Amino acid sequence: MDVGSIARLATGLAQERTEQAVGIAVLKKALDIQASSAAALLAALPPVQPLPAAGIGGNIDTTA
Image 1 (cartoon, rainbow, N blue to C red):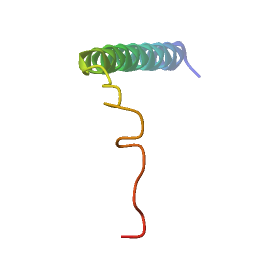
Image 2: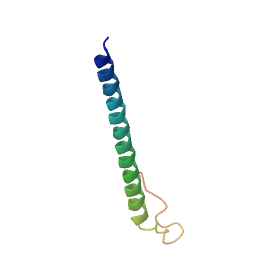
Image 3: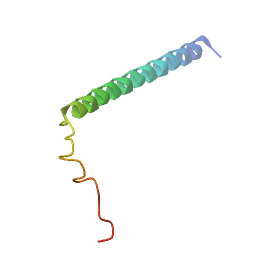
Image 4: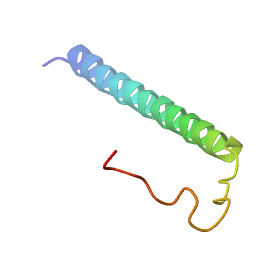
């Protein structure tokens, strides 16, 4: 191998490594944004309402 081909190979490997690092960074950022969006949606949900009285709405007629 001559010096030129070794230099091209080293440059190509370095470029590939950089592209992979950028891709991973973009993926992590997208996951962070998605997690914060999901947390915001969960925080926006109204609170769960308690049952109106004991026994009302607690039973389901499955034989009807």
